[in-house]
Length: 379
Image (cartoon, rainbow, N blue to C red; front, side, top):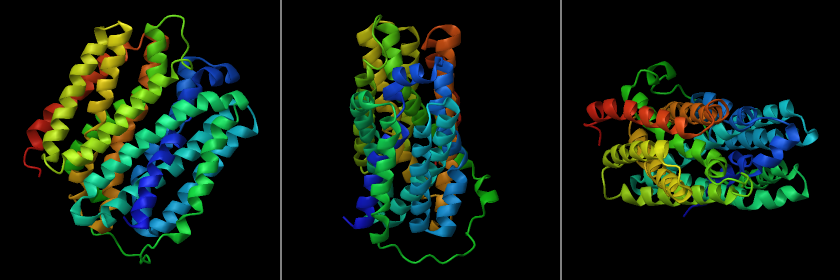
């Protein structure tokens, strides 16, 4: 394994901690800022808004500036973004810091995905991208297990831990042996990428799968607290860690599965399974059953990651690949943002997370129907 691929895979757990550092300290941060579920959802999703908006621009930046420069800029943004909330316990400052961090995570994500697509041996880009995604989910477990303990030393450590990680990764970048970048017009301009039908369809699948993984990963402790009366979300943070463990293992398995099963079959099956599980979670209220169905949703929402990006990586030339992957990821992250806020709104306004699961099941059906009809010829 080359240093470049090792660095790319190492970005997975680091981004898992950076993006999921708030949910494990949900109770403490709500008390610190004096906010409701809807308001804390804004803090959680503040990272996802710019992360989503920057996916296509981040891919274009990786295409134009090169992978080394893009990684440096992304790590700087994430480091500064996690220092800002430490300056004062003010919600607005926390939101601003999370937004700046989201700019960095977008560039880090897209430059890493392109690095793997370009450097993966034997045309196995999707497998290595799935491993990267799996390590992201597994890295989130560290946040869920460690932050509830670290926060006892002070709420500032919720943000200082990701900042320290950024500095450590930044120190590795100069050692990467990346080919010198030469600026050239992309073979597929950005305006044409927006018209590629396959990008919209794959993005829709990604919105449901990745969106469900991120939103349920964020809200699992609060969901368990809803059905386990007398327990707090922080006490049940282990549920979020378990969710991300299943998600990570599923993504890793997905990287192996697509070596034997057509990626499109994996994609169709995972969305269908996720739809059925969300319908079950709409009606089931028994704690053990809720946990089991949620963990199965983590599996089905994650196993398709490598399949989708294997299909996406074959769609355009390498000089435009960052932009195309960014386009697909943009749609997926829209799903993550919308679903994260929707579940918080459902809890505050309707008194339960069950309505959110019903809406997610409908969304899965809405993307599966055109996907079955129009992606059938994809290899």
